[in-house]
Image (tube, rainbow, N blue to C red; front, side, top):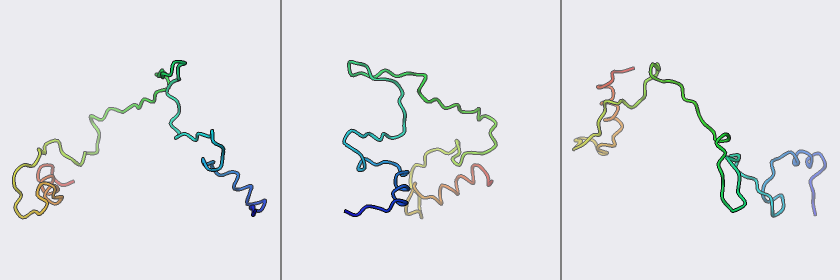
Length: 103
């Protein structure tokens, strides 16, 4: 059997383990962490102190504008000269510039 040289073997040891490198009971997980605990009856109790919450700042006077205007309604009907009809990107951009002005 061929094995790697000692210097190479030391660098291989620092790599992350895979399920093929270890025994049957190894569970790598997916880095999500636990959000609670298992009960002895097979249930799961969520610990709300462990649940991730994201704080969103107030965006009322935010300087950047969204690309999609709130004024645009769903396009309905026929679109002559456009192969894609309502899905045409050029038609959408033209209408967006007309309603919102160019930035």
